[in-house]
Length: 633
Ligand code: 0X9
Ligand code: ZN
Image (cartoon, rainbow, N blue to C red; front, side):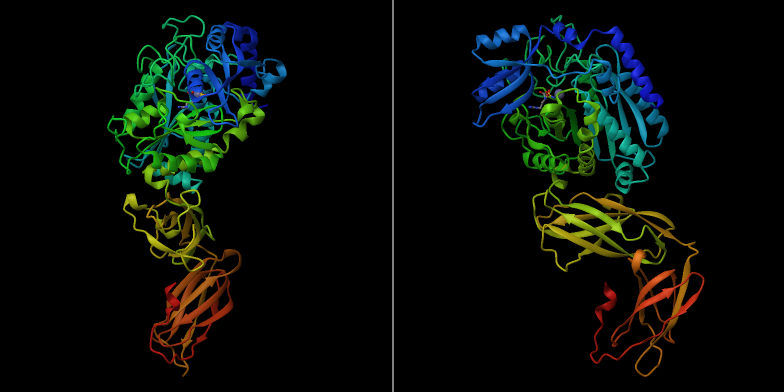
């Protein structure tokens, strides 16, 4: 056990001796019980979700009929009976309070540990991270955002804002936020996509947005969802549901639906819009990092070129949800919202849908970021049915890892999410060699895939070196390996000349466009060019014509084969038909071509470090007087 784990266990043991067991805690919460409640109409589902602590909706075979899993107080059970709802009681999922199970939660950080880890991450990566203090919780705990971007490159930059733990008990979300932060900070300068993302984009992560609520679940067992503000008229299950307190469309559904006016209800919306300090902190910070790109009228669309992505991490149900939550009407930007939502769901494997399709809610954070600012906004619900709120550590990686590529995609699409998500992915961008001698021409390959972006045919692909288009770069075309752009998935290639590149490592960016005109996001690879390579050899010789005379201005090309394939070294003969080219040691296929001559290809030309290889070409005359196309590729 490392020190960190040891500390965690010690801390949890201490807590355990100081706090009552989970079952005792549960009783404090108004004698709660876990119920499976039948609903037989959509309005009944809406009623239940507006008032109760709904954990899960289990739709039945028939439309608008099914069951709701909810954690319900004695008073709420009376309310259910008075309305004629039928239900059965289920046992609460087992929560680790014994010594064995306790170990099983060692992967979960307390808020104190999480904040300490954020400080360490910031100290370890000062040039790409900043800790932003965005406000305080009801109990006065700090709320932090870690901003991750290469500070040496000035903004404004496209922005992804991820918040976790709006609901106290959804503790896997904090861990996802931390694993995402670790992934970004650990891979900067190592992974090409993370590197350009942090150079050219900003990623902001609030790993706990309801720290007081989190502390109530340390150790797991209390099922505390809301914040801990007891001043609104409830003494037992007090607090405000921070996912019902936002200032866009707060209480818009009226008294019975979407949120509750009862201060003890788990969906209590608070006495007024944005009444809670946690809500205020998130809204003020979001306003400071995103431009306002949408009029407030419900039917006003943000422009298709709107920038920014917002994701709030919740648990559970394996869902990717987008606005609106308060109405079944589609949001004005529904096409773009759905495109990005479905695309992210293709990475994490979740079910994508408009949020109201689960049940309607008002005052949620994502209805606010979309409604108030026009940002492409999402809720991820992490975990499947049997995971509940405290998944054991054996589920940690399985729950977290599929979300990393989904979040990375969100970061890539953040410049223009409503457009980019319609465009194809660029995958498997690579040069066959990581490094080459300056002057070589290098084969670049990628796969352009539109299957999760509308399934349109690919129309073109291009690559940029070091400077993407927004940094003034100019794209170079790539071609379809099979000769034609005519399918939703295309393998593409290009030969990138490195003459004139500065020595060192370069980023090569690739993107594709579908036939509808949508460009997808970039993916990148590293390519290093060297000028001081010792393992070089020289290939020299003469290119002669049918009469034996040297051919001036003939093109000579050596292309590497075998392990280090994908590099070309090219030169042109002088007046006497002689050429001389410096290449990396290795085996080559040589080709010479000249105007009005047939090209000649010679395989198995071996260049050895420090030596000179002689290779002659003798070309037959070409009767027709037009340029052979050989040297164009
Ligand atoms: O009810 C919520 O706040 C979210 N579910 S959770 O179990 N994490 O509490 C869902 C909010 C998503 N929005 C809508 N369903 N409208
Ligand atoms: Zn939640």
